[in-house]
Amino acid sequence: MKWTVLIAALALTGCATTLSTEKAASLRTEVSQMGTSDICVMLHGRTGHTPSEATANINQIMVDELVSRDAITADEYATASQHKIQMGMGECGLLIAFGRPDDINRTVIQGAPISKQYVYRAIYSATYVYTEGGKITAWQD
Image (cartoon, rainbow, N blue to C red):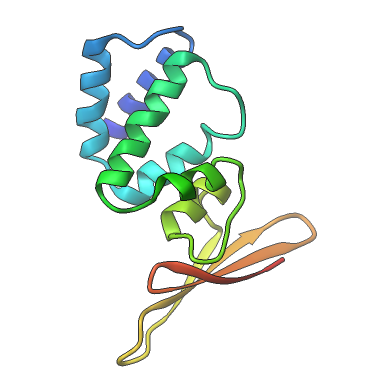
């Protein structure tokens, strides 16, 4: 329910031209309590267009939180916000670029980092993105 309130607040402030100091502080607190993947996926729907000043401020609050968690770098965000991925990008960048996947298949091998296959299905095709140790190592489309 808490995230529903945050999403509603984000939608409403997206209509405003500025973000008050109080509202920004409240959003920082809410975002700090969210899971990393949730923030990354939420940013997916907020990229790819020229945002209003308020929306840009909200996006920056979320990006700042992700950077403080070492979930993404500024360079990765710049690429992911254009809905693009690159080798070595972290899983958060992938979620910002492509959104929540249809499936995630994990491979666990003793003594090796966990490998994942992110599956993104379209009507007549699919994109598969492979990660190892949390970083993109390959993709197939």
